[in-house]
Amino acid sequence: GCDLSNPEVWEEFGRRKPPFFSPLQVFSKNATTSRLRVLSPANSKEVVGEVPLPSDAEMEKVLSNTASFALEWDRLPVEQRVEMVQRLAKEIWEYRHDFLYLLCAEAGKTIPNALAEIREAIDFCHYYSKEALRLFSKPILLPGPMGEENKLHYHGRSLWVCISPWNFPLSIFLGQLVAALLTGNVVVAKPAEETPLIALLATELAYKAGIPKEALSVVAGDGQIGQKLILHPSVRGVAFTGSFETAKIIARCLSQKEGPIVPLIAETGGINGMVVDATAAIERAVKDIIHSAFNHAGQRCSSLRVLLVQKEISKQLLSMLSDALEDMFVGDPRYSETDVGPIISPSQLETLNQFSHLFRTHGHLLTQAPIGKTASAYGYYFAPQLFEIPSIDLIDREIFGPILPVISFSKDELRRLLSKLYQKGYGLTMGLQTRLDSEIERLSSEAPVGNFYVNRSMIGATVESQPFGGEGLSGTGPKAGGPNYLLRFVYERVSTINTAALGDPSLYFLDGS
Ligand code: UN1
Image 1 (cartoon, rainbow, N blue to C red):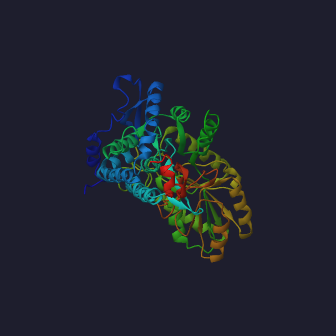
Image 2: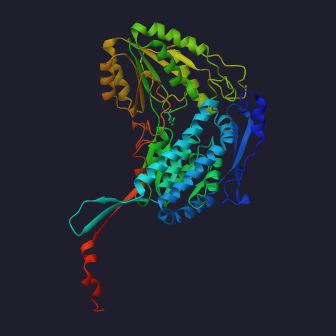
Image 3: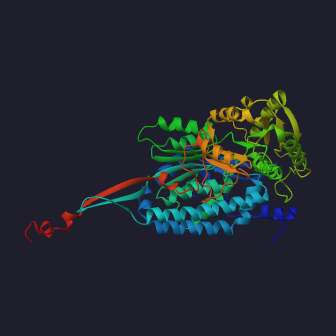
């Protein structure tokens, strides 16, 4: 093992140039007019890499080439596609140091978060492979009268566009495309413009694992490029993870397209609450709150966005949370002591400053974590903040960063407070800290959320054990990493065969032979 807290190790990683900087074989080198320069959020003077941006003509070529391979890909036995994905999982593991480097440098992840993401990407490959075998190996036999055979088969729908976010640039990127590919679809993927290099390395490895270039292409670029991709007439499905606002734009574009209705799988954000009542185990609550709100600088869609604390314990809890914030280490994510790394971009930083200003004006700043020495002046760092706010009405949008507003409630106010929270329309994650079984029972049965967590942190859903995804403004379902996910990528074909006719020999000899 190498000592990751040693900066020389990181320089060494930086000098490694894995074979991924010219990944789009379909784009001839000279035809590409412009390039996207990727800067590290940890230090914007560091250029992590450059990727080509496609011209309209190149995009057209990629989309139509990929679409024309769809039937051939769908006809492969599922076992062959599974083998490729299993090899891909091995390659991801082989290249874990490169991903670790890129996840920290390009996406600003801390080392533990980067490692967890690499593991999650591999878990997605294994779990969806297992699911594909379960669903695709044999058709499902349906009942019918004697002499008739009814079978349900799953088929790929053809071309999917997969649009993935910068906060999980490896695991969500791969999860989407592996699901689409295993179910017999071909894919053009567009990673977030902030994190194309991780996606391009993963794609190179997919090719190395035997997934044909005709079945999978990656196009770097911004929302405009994404829009052009989804508007192409060959597209038969879109998988998207990102903000609700962008999902809405995608849905509008799709509804205006000529041709068939195109399904959209959208996984979006949340205004995720946690309730801590007076019976809660307070030390554990503090640990879970800090982890839920500030891990990955609060840049997870599952992150805690508003804390509701019962008045009897709020003074003690807030003072313990303040102490924890003061001990937090904010800095370069590549140092092992760092708890909280940078924000992804200057524009996200600007949005966080606006929320901070709003809460300072209408609420009260309790504590702000110090920014550590390793944080470069050229990085996009934001000191995590804890606020007391008077009303939940102040929060009308998802705050995607390390800001935690807290509201204190008395027992008879909780119902009204929660109904206001639910009325915001999001429904992704929710947390509860209590010792009362009756509260667990009541809240878990009424909360309109996709993932409900009791007496633990409310982030870090794992593949298979905690399928992840929300309700209402938080997404369309089905849950990623769950047993229904692959089914959304397929179309169902039922074949009905009159077996009595086949079984009657006289039918074969009608011509008298
Ligand atoms: C996201 O932030 O887009 O539960 C998804 C979690 C992760 C999923 C986050 N497994 O925190």
